[in-house]
Each structure stands twice: as C-alpha cells, then as structure tokens.
Image 1: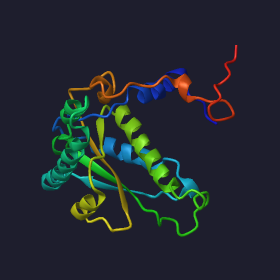
Image 2: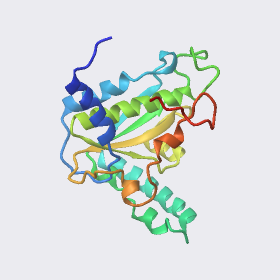
Image 3: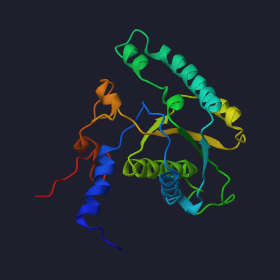
Image 4: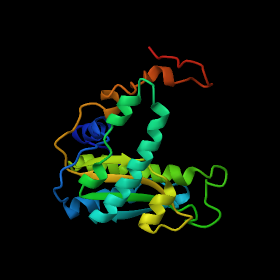
Length: 221
C-alpha cells in the first residue's frame, strides 16, 4: 500500500470536512479537463461485485435544465404540505432549489440493476448494494469537485418517472441523483440545513456501539 505524505493526508481530510451541498452557482463554464477528472473519480469508486452500475448523463441544454427545475419545484411544493403549521414551514420554503437552472452543468447519475447479469458477487443477499455502489461514486465526485474548486449540489426533490421522461431513461434504470456543478461565490462554512436550523450534527459518541447494539463503546486510556 502506498502511503500518503502528511500534506496529502491533510488534503483528503480537508475535502471530507469542507465539502458542502451548494445551491447557488455562477454561470461560468467549467474546464473540460477538470470534469473528466471528476468523472474518472466517480468511475473508480468501489462497487459490489465490480458491477459498476453507474451511468452519467451530462445536461447542459438550458431547455432540459428548465424542464428538470420545473419538476423539482413541483415536488418541493408538494412536500411543503408536510411542514405546514410546523416550526419547519418557513425554513423549508426558504431552501433554494434553483441551482439546476443556474449551474452550467447538471449530471444525472443513474443505477442499472441489471449490470453484470443476474448473479453479482456479493449482491445476491443484499440487492440494494447496487445503489450503495452508485452512492460511493457520487461521494467520489463530490470530493473530486471540491479538490478542483468546483461546487456541487445534490437535488433529490423529484419523481423518478418525470426524470425518466425528460431524459429518455429506460424504465429499468434508476435516476439516483441530479448533481449540479459550477463555481459559486456563496460557499458556507457549515451545512446549509444546519445554518437554517433544520438539524444539528449529532454527537458521534452517541452513534457508536461496542460489539452489540446499544452497548456504549469502551474507551481506551
């Protein structure tokens, strides 16, 4: 195993801790070389049975971005009903989702559950591992984008049939995420949902058990 230098190691941890879900973008075009490195990073993510179930649809046409933004806003308005007359009502409505229209590029990341055939090593017992593999690819993209100085936002307010219709995705393919990428002049020092007082980061010690569920971890002196 090749070991990182101390500087390289700190760079990895900085990307992990400083990565943010961004909602405001500048229209400036993105360098094609940087985008290729981001996609390569996604394609080198771990996948169960090495099935590599991902595809990436690069969306730059404004009409397509507008169509996606419409179905996202439609879903946001539908979800807002669940927060009416609660302390989260105004906080939810304040969350910005227009990034798809602003960002120069949105990537639809999909999952093909049929990739690699009927019997995928390690997947027969837990079918969801194909989606887990795609999630690893998305995380790689996020960290690579941060390394390139490019902001990324994950849009998850939509109905899958709407995205399939707009992008011509076959019925058996899962549109997992709409990822908007671009430069930004608004990069928060904390997650947006924390800034909007939607939720707080939980204490890590409360989430770690020792050997059995519910048994607090023993600390080493």
